[in-house]
Length: 103
Image (cartoon, rainbow, N blue to C red; front, side):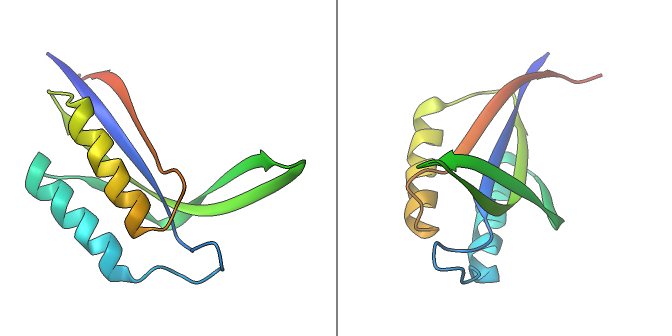
């Protein structure tokens, strides 16, 4: 049976360097757990995102939330991404899906 691993990359700090409140992440955890029956959160050691912008390298500390689902609903995910972008005041939040086979 085929599944999809969905990864959501969320920033730890806003563009001014202020940390987002824990309640924002707890709400995301709750929403995803309720909808998908569970999640994995990589929050202990933040990942580092790097990208080029105007000739300079920009850095972001991120946390990653993962859910596993047998159904992929691109419309729902697009709406959820827009909600997360508004909540975390970001131009773009990465949500990616990859086909996964359980062993």
